[in-house]
Image 1 (cartoon, helix red, strand yellow):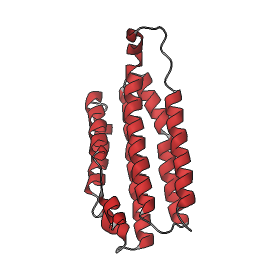
Image 2 (image 1 turned 90 degrees about the horizontal axis):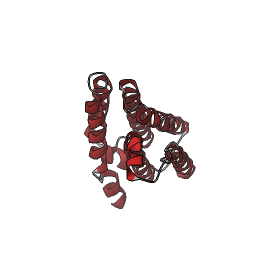
Image 3 (image 1 turned 135 degrees about the vertical axis):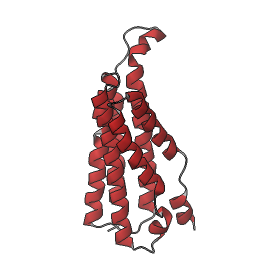
Amino acid sequence: MGSGRLEAFSDGVLAIIITIMVLELKVPHGGDLSDLKPMVPHLASYLVSFIMLGIYWTNHHHLLHAIQRVDGRVLWANLHLLFWLCLYPVVTAWAGETRFAPWPVAAWGIVQFMCGIAYQSLVQILIALHGPDSMLAAAIGPDVKGRVSLALYAAAVLLAFVHVAISCAIYVLVMIMWLIPDPRIERRIER
C-alpha cells in the first residue's frame, strides 16, 4: 500500500497534539506585560516542544516522500512514534507548571528520548522494507545526528537530578542541531 493515508493520519495527529499544547497556555490575568511573567516557564516549554514537534513533522514528511510503500510493520512503528509524540503536551505542561522541577524535566527528556527511539525504529523498518540499496538507506546513512541526539537526551534525563538548567540546555541544543536543515533525503528525492 502507498504512504498517503499514513502521512495524512500522522499529519492530523500532529496537528491535534500542537492544538492541545497551545490550549494548555492560559490567558494572563491583567493587562500589563508584567502579567506575562508567571507564564514564562509555560511559554518556554511550549516553544521548545512546538519546535521539536515541527522538526518531527518535517522529517516525517521527507521520510514518507522517500518511500514507495508501507506494510503492517511500518504502520505499527508509525503508531509507536505517534504514541510518544502524543505525550509531549503532558510533559510540556508539567515542566512549565512546576517551573522546571527535576522530575518533570526528566520526564520531558524521557519522552524526547523515546520519540527519538521510535523515529529511528520507523526509519530502520522502512529501510528493511525498501532494501539496503534504497534511496532512503543511502540518504540516512549512519545517522550520526540521530545517535548523538539519543545520547544527549539520555544524559539530560540523568542530569535533571543534578541541575535542571543543564538538562534544558541540552534539550535546546538537540533542537538547534535538528533545526539546521538536513538535506540528505531532499537531495536524494530531487535526483
